Length: 207
Image (cartoon, rainbow, N blue to C red):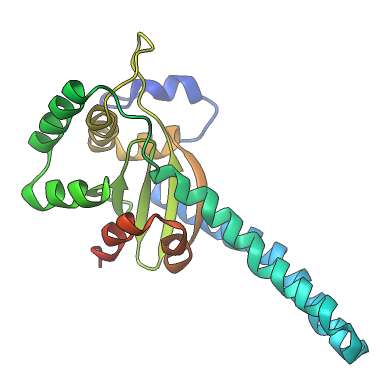
C-alpha cells in the first residue's frame, strides 16, 4: 500500500485500485446493464403491437417494466444520501461546528440546506453525505455507499460522519472510490428525480 493511501484499502484487498479509466469502464457497464434490462421489454412491446393491436395492454405493461427497472436502480443509488439517526443535540452541534471548519462558506451554506457537502476531485465533483457520496461528472452521476463508523461502535454525530468521509476523500480520492460500493451510475436527471427535494438543490448547484 502506497504512502497516503487509505488504511481501509486493506479490508478490500481483492479490489483493483480505482482510476479514471476503470471508473469509465464501470459506468459503461452500468449503461449496458440498463440497456440489457430495457431493450427486451421495448422489443416485446413493439412485437406484440405488430402481431395484434389487441395486445396493446401487454405492450403497455412491457413498457412500464422498461421504465420501472432503471428507476428502481436509481432509487437505490439515491439512498446513499439519506440522513441517518442523529446523535444527542450537544454532540450534533459540536460536530457540525467542526465540519464547518473544514469547508468554505458556500459549502457550509449548501450543507445546511441539503445535508450534502460539495468537494471537487480528479474524478469529478463529489457531494458527500452521511452514508455515502454522489460523484457528478457532466450528465452522469455515480452513487457510492460508504459509512464512517466509530472504532468503539458508538453512534457518530452527523457532522462527524460527513467529516470522516470528506477527509478520506481529500486524502485519497481513488482509494475512497475503491473502498466505497458503487450502488448506481446513470443519467443525472434520473438520480435527481429520486433524491429528496431538499437535496436536489445540491445537484442543481453543480455545473
